[in-house]
Length: 172
Image 1: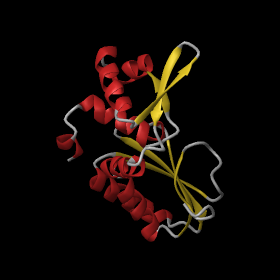
Image 2: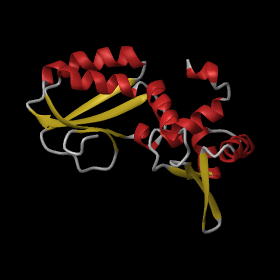
Image 3: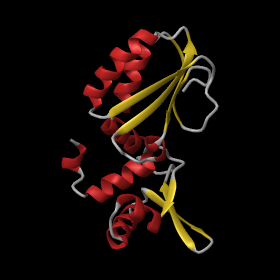
Image 4: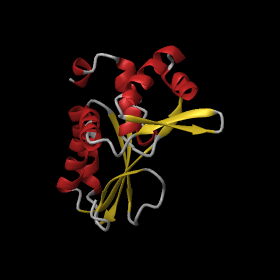
């Protein structure tokens, strides 16, 4: 549905890249390689998004790096739209519904880096998690968000880097 609103596939991919995880930053050549597109197409969209104030541009040595402008008035709105586009809101809702005593939900892998490869890796931490529900949940969530989902259950808090969707202790 978002693809009909944002007709530039490159712009949509850039928004996913930078707004799934606001800590993500990248430079022109890296984005061109990752997306398999020309640097000119990427440059055009980066310039448009930077001029609109949606992205910030930073110089690192002799490279220009881009990242989401977290101070933009629409930052949280754009981030919420992108996360809904990817189905992360539905994913979290389904996990918290009947998984048991969930302490944390953390995205890892491609999606945590802002790469929409169609696969979502999720770490779920907590005591007494409903392991039987996970196989049912996997199929249900995959149909709901139209992406492959891989769940990994942990009994202890997760310390690995990733994108925290839910943390009971931190109130997130």
